[in-house]
Image (cartoon, rainbow, N blue to C red; front, side, top):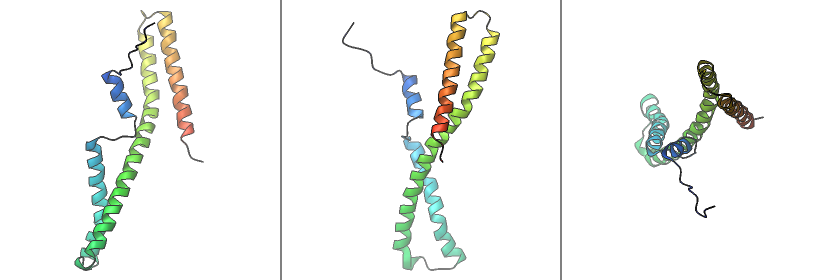
Length: 139
């Protein structure tokens, strides 16, 4: 046995890990902050145009509260994105399992060992996905 082992991930594995991590890309982060700013700035427009309040007198407070609100909303969007990706992955799992079953039924050349391995993979993935779904639920 060699003392050195290959611990590097392949590019596909890195992309898969990146998809299910809590980190978001710069593009997603910019999108979250842009949307959060729009949502946070709409009340200023309402106070200015609808209620005819003077914005200049309280501009510092509007800027401060809008900035804090933007940051909090972007944080909420980031957390929601992770949970939503997890839910979508769990829901897609059944469709992938059905597709694998169809491929197995169509492929007569597949050996019994390969069929058993793929049934094991599908059943273990479905069971672990169901367990993950039930463990993330709230009371």
